[in-house]
Image (cartoon, rainbow, N blue to C red; front, side, top):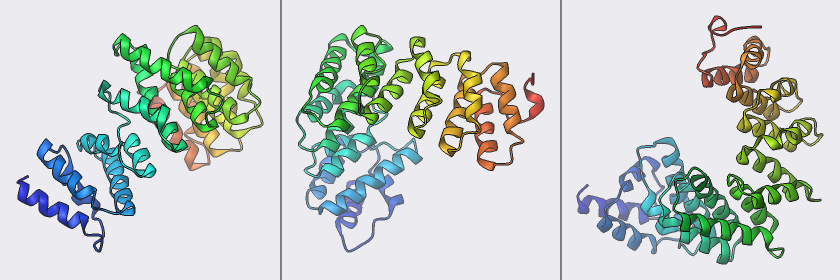
Amino acid sequence: MPLDSFSNNLAELRDESKPIIPSKLANVSTVSSEELLLFLDAWVNMGFERRRQIVHYLVDLAEEEPKLNFDAIFQACLYDPDEIVRVRAIEGLWEYENNSVIDRFITMLKEDCQESVRAAAAQALGRFALLAELGKLRPDDRAKVEEALITTIDDREEGLEVRRRAIEAIAPLSLPKVAEIIQKAYHSEDNEIRVSAIYAMGRNSDPIWLPTLLKELDNPDTEMRFEAAVACGEIGEEEAVPHLMGLIHDLDTQVQQSAIAALGIIGGSEAEAALGECLNHPEEHIRAAAEDALEDLGLGKDPISFRII
């Protein structure tokens, strides 16, 4: 786009008397360095609420249209004085895997004055913990991520939300220290920490957690059952299938759907049969979840396309 046209779009965007037209924000996708400077010059002259609205729309657009790329803007917004903008900028970079943001996320985790931002930064580092476990991160970057998350987890003065997000974030790393962290969190007296421990067991993907997860599928707490079902799917052991089948009849809709999704991830003849039966369930949300799960298994929703036992 010619710079004159780009500048005109920015002028309209900066005019707070006019409503934001989300579709026009596509014009700031994949900006050049010169366009980014123009954008930031306009940005600093906008009020907090306007900036919040824009970054909110940008995150939504990036999720809806994968071809749009606002990474340069999101990275700039990591330094915004408004905590809501910083959080949304972190969320906008959820699929960004360039190690250039690691140091900034670590700084935000350790130093940001807002707990919501520190928690979001911890979650963002979880992506790099996973990349490290897959061998896709340099050893020095892996060490930095590990150190930052472990320090946060061990900091008893840190807020609960930040510590639990750090526990979830570090979970993919197959280290004895990580297993110890998850086990300790599971035995916490705080239920939110225990929920994070169950979630972390799934992200850790070690079958050693399966007996614990199968037990938690019967927990009276809805959130624990939900996370346990999700984690069973992540671990992928067929031993969990009969237990997950029981949750198809759970009183909570989200628990039902998480169990069905897990069956679709695990697969096998018993899971396929259970999903096939769900296609005739009287509840529409059960049928829809089963269709999605069968598609994940590559079987489609046609009952004759999979084996019933």
